[in-house]
Length: 165
Image 1 (cartoon, helix red, strand yellow):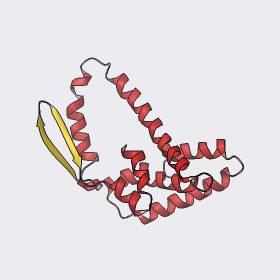
Image 2: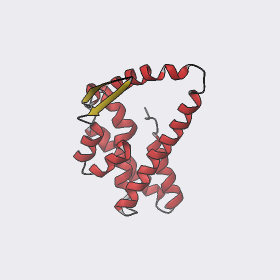
Image 3: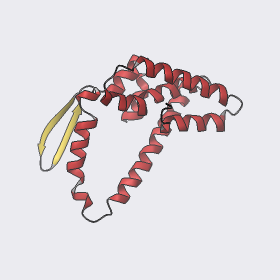
Image 4: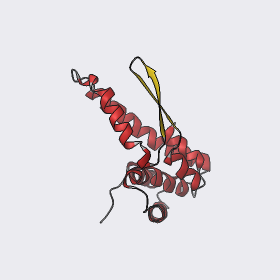
């Protein structure tokens, strides 16, 4: 069964084709090989952590490492950061459009809290510390983060800021 292409994989392939057409085939093969190795090494992670690993962390590491074959490290970092920023801008536009639906904005705080506790909870490798603030303000400090831990484990802690900036 072929896995679903992530936005990072898609954007990496686009960069390879546009900026390095003569090397695109080799870069895509190197990316796929590295991603497959990373996925195999992390196959034992929980289902909740796999969500983050497969969707962002591991494709990000594979893209970052592979791009360093054809560009300086800082440029590779900025390129991956650009992929994540583009997704964030698109998601922001979609959410902003949805919030024009009358009354929907009232549901956002409850949905946000529930989904954050689920997606960014201990089962996924996070250690959230909820802070009591009052007045309808909800704050969370992340004491442990699989994005940071995984990027550090693979020798690229600087990549974490692409996801958590």
